[in-house]
Image (cartoon, rainbow, N blue to C red; front, side):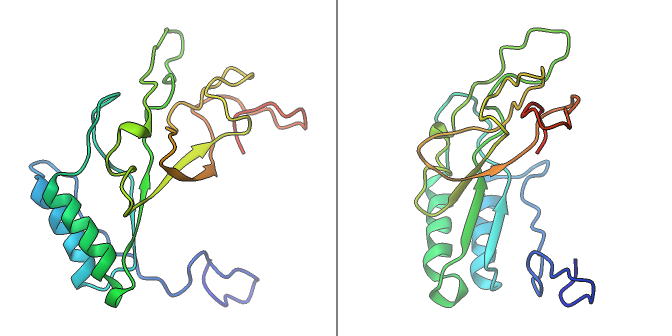
Length: 175
């Protein structure tokens, strides 16, 4: 939706400018992360949306000292001293994976292991489906949302592939 479009839509953030920053790519280094956070300071970026993080499953991982310093500096000095807001996905390996016909133990990971989510300089966001369970009564699985005490926001999400019951029984994996 575009602001003042004449049909009642206003858009989520009218007037916003989106800036893609290539961060995760073949050959990326720790310095790539530092450069991305520093880019926010010197280019008047207000908010970053980070759907990446450590790849360790059930293992402690997080920013290097240089990454942490760049993240901290962006929050303290970005936006002319108002601070850059960094939103991070809590993780994508919370429950069993959708693996139709096969048993899958899944990751059962927790964002408590993620040093980015546990940083005071980020807002951790996870998802929750209609009943808050990984395994749904209709046979579908909401496999990815990770949780921990460091997560600040939980937003509604759907599940992996599977039929959604559309009557008012309370069952179904969709929103």
